[in-house]
Image (cartoon, rainbow, N blue to C red; front, side, top):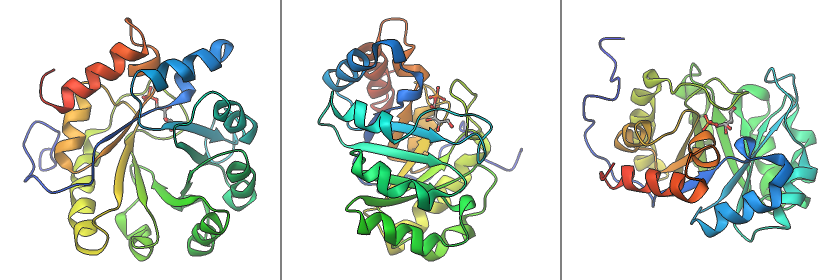
Length: 238
Ligand code: DX5
């Protein structure tokens, strides 16, 4: 990996849309879900992400649209439904009806990406696409202008608490360069292993939306302290 940027070498800074912090509910204490959602909302989260996994596209089963509806009852924040499922077209309408504002489908999960993104918009939600660490940018090149957000996974999807993959940083930078040509308002979101250290790397590479599970809900001093530490890292105060 010597020729790749492992996060220590600075990238040429690029303009990005505004920064957003998005706690991932997967790391919350499900036994106190309402409290956890309200705590993250009061602590200044910009959005919340709900990871929907089917045990097929990823080797784990997490939560379904009913969870989106439950979270919706405790917050007015925008909700992202991150669909890690093999047949995303079957879960878009249930997720939108449950209260998801942004619906993220994996490009690796469907041969009909254009149609699936159109069906998200038809449900009144904002279309977004995710790609795995090893997937080439070419997989989403033809839909760059059809989405409001591109989620570049920084771990292999399926579990929280994993280690950030620095090899993804170059790809984030290339994606930001490409988006600044064709869709400069489009967010680049990163997800997996985001903490006060890796968030600065990903931001320098060109990401502007940061999903964090463990570093928020498992922060020793609580969610508010976890979010504050991420904010401080983004401002270079960590
Ligand atoms: C993993 C999920 C992530 C995960 C992040 O597949 O998509 O949202 O919950 O958890 P941390 O921040 O603990 O890596």
